[in-house]
Length: 110
Image 1: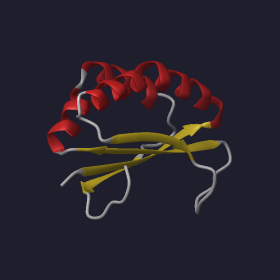
Image 2: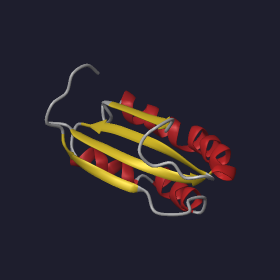
Image 3: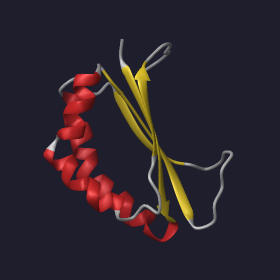
Image 4: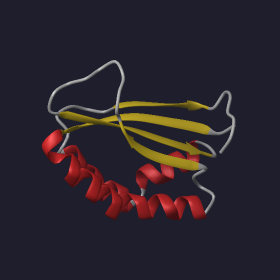
């Protein structure tokens, strides 16, 4: 069974554009590399446009990744380029993200 990772990232509105630029330049190429190698099944980053929690000055994102298993998840988390990106992204976050992962139970598409 595959593993699904869901993270809710929170950034200061004033820093969200900077985060998106950094993500596109530093993480997206790594996502494409892992996808091409079969280590990612799918991945997306989506700005939250609605939901239960709205806070002025905070932009939230849904980060969703599906991987073949925990080994690929850990390989990505330990990749030097991602490890280098994390402190820069964390510096823009007013609070820790919400992080969840588990074995995929049901899935359609993708």
